Amino acid sequence: MRVLIAPDKFKGSASALEVAAALAAGLKESRPDLEVVLLPVADGGEGTIGAALSAGYELVPCAAEGPVGEPVQSGFAFAGGTAVVELADVTGLRLLPGAKAPLTASTYGVGQVMKAALDDGAATIVLGIGGSASTDGGAGMVEALGVRLTGEDGTEIGRGGAALAWLASVDPSGLDPRLGHGRCEVLVASDVDNPLLGPSGAAAVFGPQKGATPAEVQVLDLALARWAELTEAATGRHVSSKAGAGAAGGTGFAALAYFGARLVPGVELVLDLIGFDEALGSADLVITGEGSMDEQSLGGKAPVGVARAAAKAGVPVIAVAGRLALTPEQVADAGFAAAYSLADLEPDQAASMARAGELLARIGRQIGAAGLEPGFGARLFSLQANG
Image (tube, rainbow, N blue to C red; front, side, top):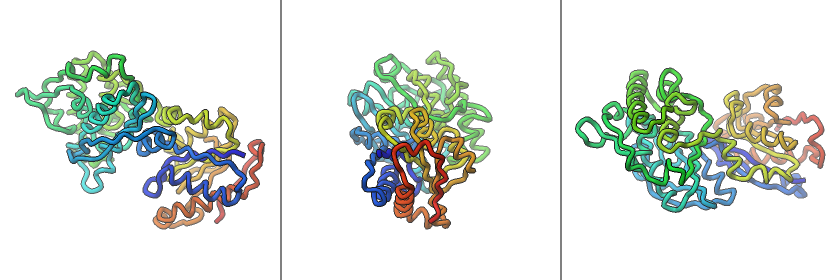
């Protein structure tokens, strides 16, 4: 039998590759005869570069500006003319472990990494935009790529979403000519369908997650409205109300308006990127999972995307989660033959997170001891982690 292990990260506990390796170790301990293939996945947020690297891409390091201007070491994954850029790795919320900066955090560093990818010969840029610290509408990103943003006095405005309130002029003539003219395609991996503005927009919905108070949400929404008005006049692309424009604090809007980007469901794009269908072709079983599986997961998170892709090929899927908050009916409806939870082995969340590798290996042993044989997918599973 051939088992494909394709989990997302367990946030705060283990990377996707670490999760896959721990499950594989336990599985092989029970069943050394199994052929096990590791293929970590992601949904466009944190871990997207890691998934690409595990699939054979090479890391190209580069320096960039972090969310509040501090230098960070970032990079992109590169193979065959395709560069994978992960917003969370350069201007992500995780880079602000202390006080957040909802008004001043910027996506400037993302543009710097994209420019480095273009300089390296990228013909396609896959931009994963989950985990943003900023609500600047992607203004910093396009500024780093040559768009000039100035105030009434003709000087460049500052970084961050709040500074857009002072914006008087947008000049896109300096935009890197390798973008927006068919020379380099930009694909944005995002599962967010929010527009840029209003009660379901970037500031109102995601601003509080980034530390914005109700008053700051209003400031940001008004500033983004100014940004949208001037951008749409300058580019001729009226995309602020398009689904996904509000993704990553409005980074989706800038990608649409300035790059003519395509927004693609994150997990679908990543699965295509790492060659999931090819790896799936000869698999008898897929094991996937993430740190917390709940109703949000059903909206298109990585494990459900994996299950959907596997279902098309008729390959059964087992889910493993740190915490499972789905009913058995929801688990089955999502396409999983069975689901295991680390919490069943260690109910204390802190201890479970600290012991994630050990617990994942135990679950791997349990799955391996379940009598897996070729053709078992036709049977109804009722496997439960019981410690």
